[in-house]
Each structure stands twice: as C-alpha cells, then as structure tokens.
Length: 150
Image (cartoon, rainbow, N blue to C red; front, side, top):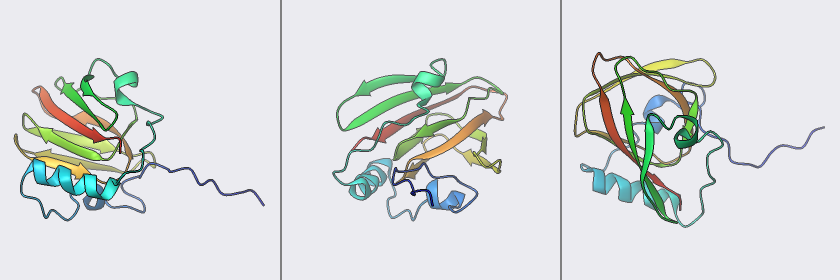
C-alpha cells in the first residue's frame, strides 16, 4: 500500500472546497487591513511553502513583485482585455481590486466559476489555492496581491 503524502496540497475550488470557502471566507473584516489581519492569524507563525506554480515565474507579463520580505510578498497584477494566465497557485493572503474585475477561474479539476468585484473590493484566502484566470472584460484589470509567507 503506497504511503500517503503529508505535503500540503493547494486547495482546489469547485471540489472539496467551495469558492465561498476560499474567496469569500466569513468576512468579519470590513476593510482589507482587517481581512489581512484575519488571514495572518490563521496562517500563524508557520512558513508557507513557495508555490510550485508561482505566477510571478510562470507569467511575469502579468505578475510583478513590488515588495518581498521574509513575511510577505506584494505582487502587482495586470491583465489586458480577454487575457488568460497559465494554471498557477497563490499563497494565503488578500487581493485588492484596483479596477473592476470580471474573471473566469478554471480549477485543476476543470470546474469553473465567474468572479465579479468592483474596484476597492477585496477577497482573501487562508490556504494556498490554484487556478487559471481569464479576464472576461474588454478593459484592463489591475490589482494588488498581498501574500503571507508566515
């Protein structure tokens, strides 16, 4: 009987975890700052492993590191109209929409969902998760991702 892997696996939305479990967890926080504190309290002091499919390495056209420390990484995101990324992973953290967003997310199991947010809104995740993103809009999308490493 093969041994089970104990390595942390990225969450797959649309299967065991629903989109609301990852993207819109119980929002006690009314602001991005409060949401980030909530995520940080869940991550704790353990080091999050570097994603195997890091969007900054896989898709540098759309993902650019603005700041990185041993505790966090801030990534600027820019998708042109109708652009699609390769499958990639995100660490626990928070994404702040700098423009309105209309995306289709495709997960590793093939499930899809549409995500629609207004500029200034945010979503957070307390786990590493994986998806392919496609900008459905006819305009540029811009956002900031704040990933927590520990």
